[in-house]
Amino acid sequence: QVQLVESGGGSVQAGGSLRLSCTASGATFSNYGMGWFRHPPGKEREFVAAISRSGLSTPYADSVKGRFTISRDIPKNTVYLQMNSLKPEDTAVYYCAASRTAVPGRTPSNYNYWGQGTQVTVSS
Image (tube, rainbow, N blue to C red; front, side, top):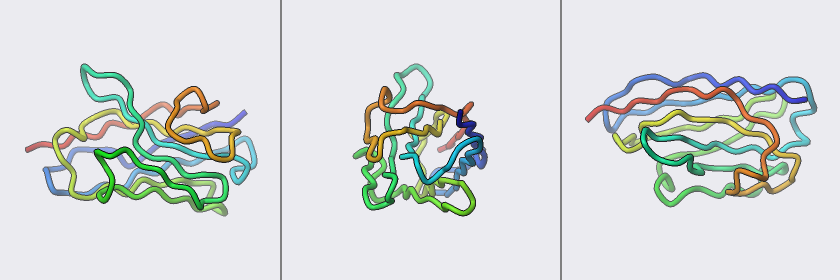
């Protein structure tokens, strides 16, 4: 059983930056592919970014490509989402997820464990 705890959310003005962290416990972190999803107000949950078990595959949603960067620190059991040039449309609850699949990609059903979410609010 994997427990995931997100942190780093908050309120920021458009153009600003935030770094989200997701720390895993309860299993060998390096055995999991990881992903970030978000749930904007009034919309469906959507894929943001993922990182494969090896770290070599890092797909991004088109809406965040070039602005967001996903990375992982194996010794710290932590995956990060660096968010730059934030826009009001990035406002959402952001969720970290872990997958037993080596390259989990964009599909939520590929992920086995989810964190509780952290709120990101971007004001114009």
